[in-house]
Length: 99
Image (cartoon, rainbow, N blue to C red; front, side, top):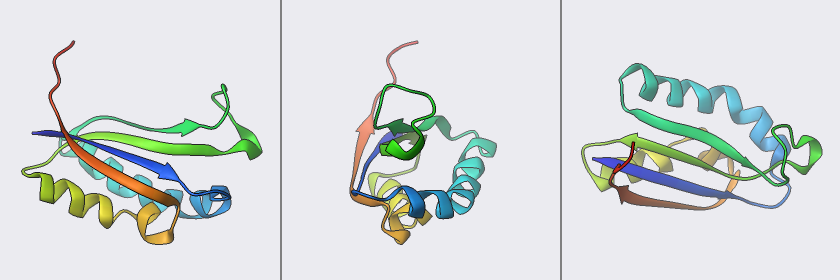
């Protein structure tokens, strides 16, 4: 089943996010290579594809896992989560209806 991982950044997390990004991308790339990634990306704090020092308000990943628990475990072990980039992480089942 698909699951949405919706994470909200803590304040002043940009430098930690930058430092942790390579390790985070390795894990997301693995989902992609396994054919389990629908979409992933950050949410800029401002209306720009390059928010600069404004940074990001969070991230969204929609990926396929066997169970909700597996999705939560994956999110809990993400480098961004482990490094304290996120103030909160919400994981919920998702049904892809369109397209």
